[in-house]
Amino acid sequence: MKKISVLFVCLGNICRSPAAEAIFLSLLETKGLKDGFIVDSAGTGSWHIGKKADSRMRIAAERRDINILSRARQITIKDFDEFNYILAMDDSNFRNILDLKKRSATSDYASIKKIQDFRSVFNEQEVPDPYFGGDEGFDYVLNILEDSVNGFLESIS
Ligand code: 4NP
Image (cartoon, rainbow, N blue to C red; front, side):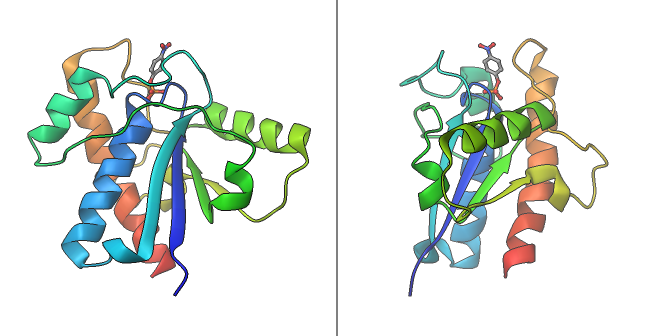
């Protein structure tokens, strides 16, 4: 059977989207669904290409037994033809993804949505950028994402 492919996207691909990717992988593992999925993350920006996720996010995730192993990359136009779902962390990412798609005239293969469309417990309509804030911001992002990533999986199951 064809795997379902999911790409999480933020700005730098070192905080929010790597966390969403790792949370989703952990959830799939728990539910025994991992073999049915291809999961990745990317940034709209290029500053951090090749870097590990921000150590503050990796440490916060490790406290929840979630390992963030990804290396940053930038979204490319190929992603629009390869991923079933492209999930943006905030409105700005969402607009930038749609702009890139429009400029490159790719197919409508990917369903492009905001991850917070799948929230249930938290009311945040965007995943806040924790990069310039304190450590508590990273935990908050993980709380928000655990809710909405779970909601996303339920929506496609
Ligand atoms: P992310 O966070 O988009 O969640 O990875 C950021 C990481 C880096 C920067 C901004 C946001 N930056 O300006 O370098």
